Length: 173
Image (cartoon, rainbow, N blue to C red):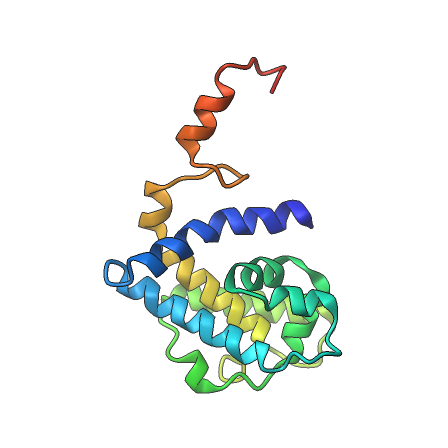
């Protein structure tokens, strides 16, 4: 769990910071980031003093919302219970139709395996489904950022990480 959680941070944190710092340079990614922030705000509005610690942790900021929402079973279950995601929050999801069809099929399969009594309905998304779709869209729109600033799993810029470990043998690493 922790390893995958940190991989999610490594995959998204740099892109989030770049889009926040340069919204005019990445307008489509900014649009996707706005959707993720709106979704986070909606989920935060459901958090109470009685909410579990993982729910409070997962809603503290966008980085944790994405990483926790993709990796923690308890938080995923919580997100999946929120089925009143406003259409205004969702906006128009501009995923390619072929990809959207694939996501639809995957979600239908997950529901069948999980024994849920419903099938995936793109008109009524749970917060978990919205998080999957919006994060996928955001990452697709930030590929140029991620290519320019490749990072290792611990979040260090790749060149810096390479310089630091190049002095060691494979056995020492």
